[in-house]
Image (cartoon, rainbow, N blue to C red; front, side, top):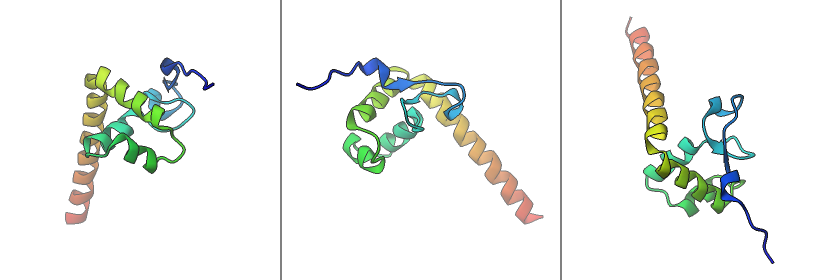
Length: 97
């Protein structure tokens, strides 16, 4: 007989890991990292292959969290993109001087 997993235990937040953002329990893999790959067109199975130490159930839990809390995760992604663009602009400006 298989063990029953409470899916509510698969996604956690801790202030000292991944900046307090939601992540897969016991791993340093954030929900937003999974969401990015999913948005790029990868299937849950392909994402699980990328992260060999993460189960397919954990991937689906991360995707369920993403879909249930899309505004939160999209805000994190927008912050990350803005910071990337800021650093890129600083780098380019420094190279052009």
